Length: 140
Image 1 (tube, helix red, strand yellow):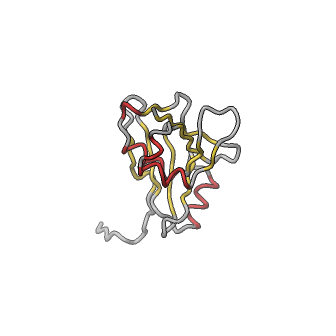
Image 2: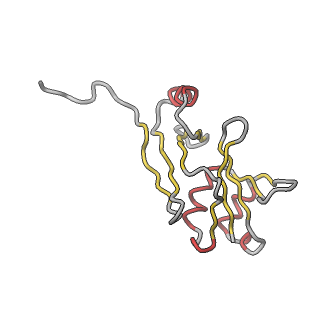
Image 3: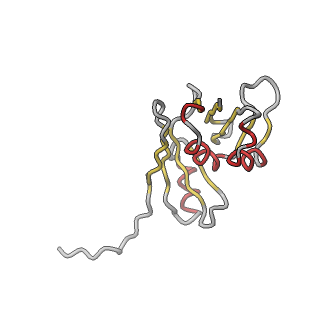
């Protein structure tokens, strides 16, 4: 059984927490994610704090019978990356600070990632797109 949770930390960043059994750690899908993750110490039900960019590939490629989403998990968030896909910027809401960072990065598409709690399907759709003024020839 693989247990997954998305939550916000004190800095309003989204954290992807993961609990996996030793048997599943040998899966190629998890090896890279575990190498880049932080081990959570103490009394936590989760083993690893994984970078959020691994969330969609892990969530989409695991058998739904072997997956469990925490009841208190975040079910939707916004995401965009810089032009090189080097840095990812995520937030639960489109705040003024988040939109300022979006403009600084050249206004790439902002995607809304939504998780269906019942079927465990992940839907990724464009939420904000840069408006190009003067691109349309309107004849009145």
